[in-house]
Image (cartoon, rainbow, N blue to C red):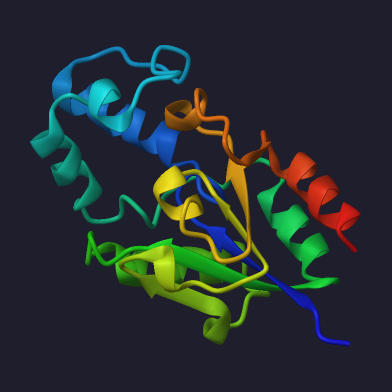
Length: 177
């Protein structure tokens, strides 16, 4: 029997990009942002210095050194038993991130085959049964069932099924079997 497919976003879902941005942003700009202080803000509201933010995101090793989200590795490995997993990242906006993301995945998720990694510009082309993402701009165009992974910028969004962590994501998806 053919397995159902899941596309999983990297930044903010598998990788803790929030912590990394906050740390770099605070160092570069002398701010004291915390995860709690930016809850409910858009990215533009949380990080007002857009040029500085783009500089951070284009810095060598920014994406290569992202922390892994809690329970992500074990959860994806568990889901892979019953689903075909694709890792999907809208990475071409930051070209330096392409090789770094592939290396990061090889280190933390070596059980994901290279052909199941999709680095793209827009996720509108992704056609899987499920998409786990933290951005409504991707979920709104999902061809399958969108699942919103909680992040500071989507707290006030309510039009998609929400999971707050990887244990919830596994539970929701296993219920569909």
